[in-house]
Amino acid sequence: MTDTQAPSASLAEIRSMLAALPGPGEGARAAAAAREARLVKPAGALGRLEELSSWMAAWQDRHPPRLRRPRVAVFAGNHGVAARGVSAYPAEVTRQMVANFVSGGAAVNQVCRSVDADLRVYELSLEAPTADFVAGPAMDDGECARAMAYGMMAVEQGIDLIALGEMGIANTTSASALCLALFGGEAADWTGPGTGVAGDRLARKREAVAAGAALHAGSGDGLELLRRLGGFEFAAIAGAVVAARFARVPVLLDGFAATAAAAALLRVDPGLLDHCQIAHLSAEPAHARLCAAIGKRPLLDLGMRLGEASGAALAVGVVRAAVECHAGMASFDEAGVSGPA
Image 1 (cartoon, one colour):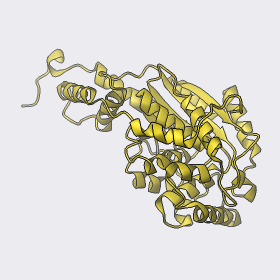
Image 2 (cartoon, helix red, strand yellow; image 1 turned 45 degrees about the horizontal axis):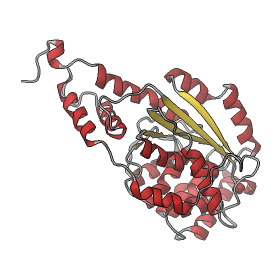
Image 3 (cartoon, one colour; image 1 turned 180 degrees about the horizontal axis):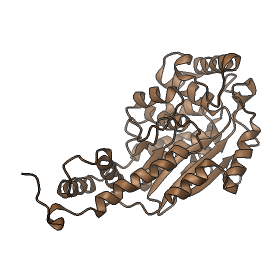
């Protein structure tokens, strides 16, 4: 994102948008339930796949639901707090990894190919990181709002499902501070190894998380906390979540950082993530705590902690299986199979 690419916006404008969020399509949800009851299987035999097909129908407001054009969006940003030595890698790795995404050499490229998903990578001012949130707000109002607006642009017409992830050195530090400010507790509850830090470096990371949360907690709603403790890529993810709601596009959230970015929206509207699923449980310890705090159960648990939307991309295949089973299975009558007695 550059100044010429970033739409003009303010957080006040975004708050006004959130007052008019559409709800689920109850007619489509009812139609999905009626069809599910007739499919040639015992009731509930497909477990969460049945829940997913109903969720897709409700939030697409379409029955049967469709999954022809899934998008995987990776937002990349740099964090000023990285200068405190809280990560195992230098900040220039963010740009290097973006180049790897573009050239097709990252894990997420291979996963997207395997699930037939469209991958898009969005850079957000990599040459100009956010400010150090230990010393002051990470972003000013305009910066945060422009990043959110930029994220909204990822939700293009015709997309059936969007999987959201991120890349940014020190982003687990930002996620930990944001979660501490949102949900309380101690810095140690929310701060894990991230890219593999331990010892003195992990202690520095926890100190930064505690200091940042202490400085900014209680300063306002979720958007204000996002502005103060998040990153450009966090704001873009939040913006994409909002745009997806208006466009009736269900959302898969990747690991700890992506979930933390979206969780800030719950302090504005507690139902704002109803059209979202947590794609997988990250091995980052605080992710399980965060999922419990927002009342969502991840779809997959594979011990992953890579980020870059890799887990969310994998979950596209699970959602596709749910949609295909719902739309393609025969009913008891069609298959000539006797129903339950």
